[in-house]
Image (cartoon, rainbow, N blue to C red):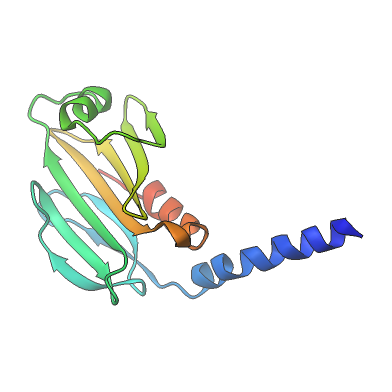
Length: 155
């Protein structure tokens, strides 16, 4: 008797995530000056926030500004590895998730009830990054969106 309820609860928990994914319009965003590109959910990030600080690219917001996404290329003149570049950037304490390879790094944590997620791919003389911030209470709704954005980042 508990198994059907557990399964039903699992399915109901998936419905909001599936609805977001099914109704989301995606387009490829390209940073014109560097060629860095990523699949972007344009039906979610509807407001242009202008150029980001410290790099070339663009920042986008949800209509209510509860979430934002930045696509940018950050100069890496020494062509440092992702591990060295991340160390030099001195990320804040409290990282919950961290993955570093020879080609990219991903770090994520929670600050002020918001999840921040940062993935940077190593490019030629730059780190090409996507940064996403969204309410921690909405994590389940954002998981699929963040995963797709992250997996489509190209240098």
